[in-house]
Length: 297
Image (cartoon, rainbow, N blue to C red; front, side, top):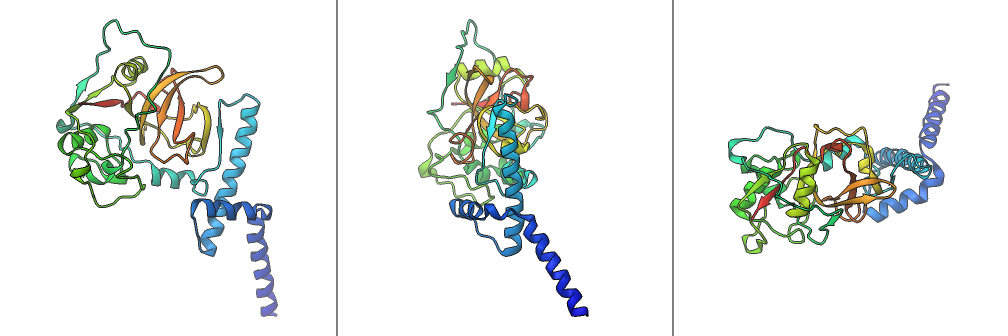
């Protein structure tokens, strides 16, 4: 009798596991793992697949609403699609909110007199993001993947220099600093801070200076799965920032409205070839103008 009871319980448990996933998506799950080089043991595979299927449903529902004009951007599956929003933030976002110390004081940005700000600017040919800051700027107060400040990173560059992204690729992991002075591509003499929360000043800086480092709230699951369009996320915080990116331009979309062109550091497999259009002139949405700065050379 006990054997029959145990057998019945095993059957119920097996059925529950079976119902936890959509068998029609098995081939798609296998293809997803193959494309992104993912391999899991049985228990972990079930966990990751369950998360992946939930994200698929989220994408589908969001995009239906987008097709009805309720959203100005779309979502899509990417290599982070088998992570929960919490796991994604802990793995990928590393900006640390902190008070600036005396050793990281910069100049204040002053909008040039008589500047004529163009309607749109695009500096996407520049590509200045590099990850050796994650591994090597600890002495300036940054904490690797646990977070840091752009101004402290600029202080590091002033002292040591920086390599190109192709020579020091981003891995989303803390690692030993392997900076090679022989491959130094640039250095700076300090940095300039944009007035906090001032989007007019940020636009003027992008137009007159070039790409500007900005910190944003990238903790929403919609950011994790962003695929295109003008990202308008009212749930974003303008003060709780967790990710550093590069504003390389701005413009206006007839459907999505004003936007910033933002270069991320998660490779071209995320977003639109590594970029996102973030809402502009929406009360500093996602805090894009809260902690903006650029290096002086």
